[in-house]
Image 1: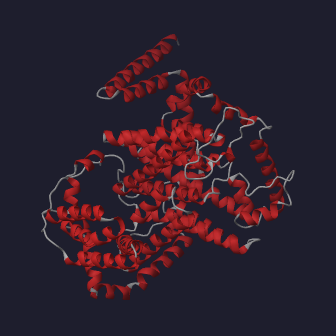
Image 2: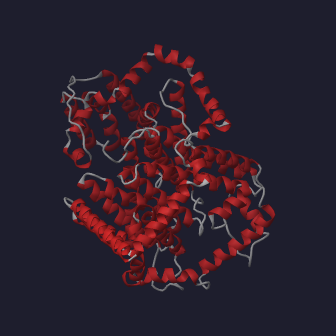
Image 3: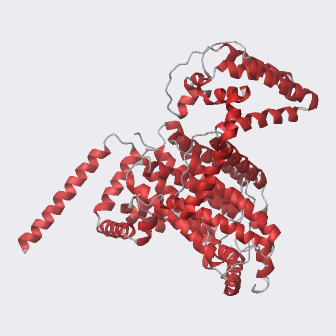
Length: 634
C-alpha cells in the first residue's frame, strides 16, 4: 500500500515538473503580460483549489454537452435544424418569392446601359482608377465653393488634380499608404490604370453642383449623398450595417429605423436582381423570428393598439439587424470592420462622457446628493440616462478589452487598450450599481469559461477592492442592501406591483409599450409609486407578452448561448474562441443587468443588443459551417 502511495506521489511530482518545463518553454518569446498570465495559470492549475475548480468545470462541461437542451439546440448537426423545420421552410418559401419577382427585372437590368455601367463600376471598385474619383471631385468643386467658399474650392481642386495625375487604381494608393499600414496588414500589389478626365462621374457631379448653386448647398449635398448612398447600399448592403453600428449611439431612434429599413430594402432588391447570397437560418434566428411575430400580435391586441403597434413595428425593424448580420457578415474582414467601428463609436461616446465629468455640464436629475454626499454627478454621454449608458458599456467594454489580445498591430492594440480603459472609467462614472454587479459577473464568466485556474485569485481581488476603489463607488455598492435608498425601495415596490399585475395578466399580457403598462399598472401599484416600466426585463416582457413571450425570450437567449458555446468548443484555445467567450459573457452581463432594469427601454440600446447578437451569430456560423478562422491565421 505504501509503495503504491509513494509511486502515486512520485508520478504527480514528475507530471508537475514536466508541466512547469512546458510552461517555461511556452513563455519564451512572450512579452511581460503574457508571461505573467501563463505563470498565474500554472500556479492556479496546480494548486489544490485550482484542481478543484478545474474538476468542477470539466464536470459542468460534460453535463452541458450531454444535456437534452444542448443536444437539441447546441450540437453541430442540429445547428440549422430550424431551417429544415416547417417554420423555417415557410420562411424560406416566402424568401424565395423575391428572386422570382425579380426575374423580369433582371432583363431590364441586362438591357439598361445605366444599370450595366453602375454595376461595372461598383463590382470592380477595387480596380477603379484614382482618376475616376478625381473626376468626380473636380465636378464637386462648384458645390464646395457654394457651401464653404474659396478655400474649400481650392483644396478640393488640388486633391482632384492629384488623383487625376495618378496612374494607378484607388486601392493601390490605399495599399501603399503608410497611414493605412499602421492599422492593418495589406498586400501591396500595384494596379496600373489610365490617367485623365472621366466624363461620366464629372458630369454627374457637375449637375449636382449646379443644382446646389441654384437651390442651396444642402439640396446639392443631399442629392449627391442620396444617389451615392443608394447605389452603395444596393451593391454593398453590409455598408448600411457598418453605418448603423457606428451611428447607433449618436443618431435619433427614427433615423436609425429609417437606415435599417433602407438597408433591408436594398438587400431585398439585390436578392431580386440576382445577388448571390445564401439564405440560412440558425436556431436562434428561428426563435427570434417567432418572437418578432409575437411582438406584432401583442402590438395589435394591446390595451392601447395604436401606440403598441407602432412600437412593435419599430422593434421588429431593429430585430432585422440580427438577420442582416447573419446573412451579410460572411467574411472575416467584414467581422473585423464591424468590431472596429463598434469600438470606435464607443470611444467617441467615452470622450463625451469624460468631457461631461471634467466640465460638470450634465443634468443632475439622476444624482442623489442627499444620500450620497461624495457623489457629485453621473455621466450619461449621448444616452441621457447613466443607467442606459452603463448598459451600452456592458456590451462594448468587453469587446474592446478582448480586442487588445486579438489585435496584431501595436497601434491597434494601443487603440483598443485606450478605448477599454476609457470605457471602464466611464462605467465607473455612471455610478450604476446594477452595471457594477453586471461587470463583475462578466469578469467571472470569462474566467469560468476561459481560464478557470484564475478563480483562486478572485477572492484576493475582491478583498483588495475596498482599498483600491474610491469612496463614492464603495458607497454605491453599500447602498444595494440599503432600503432607505429611494432608488432601491422604488424598484422593490415596482417589482411587487408588477407581480400583483401578473397574477391576473400572466397568460395574455397587456401589450407593448409604456402606455399599455401604465394604464393597467396603476390599478396594482403600491404606495402610489408611478412607473413607466417594470425596471426588470423579464417582468416587463411577461407583463407585455404573457408567459408565451417570456418563454420565447428565454428560448432564443439559450439557443444563442448554446450555438456560441458550440463554436467556442470547436476552436478552443484560439483568438476566435476568446472573442466568442468574451462576447457571450458581455451578453450574459447585459442580461444580468436586466434583473435590475428594463434594458430594452432605450431603443438604441435595443438595436445595438440585436446587432451584437447577430455579429456573434455570424462568427459562430463562420466557425461551424465554413470552418473559417475569423481572428486567427488560417
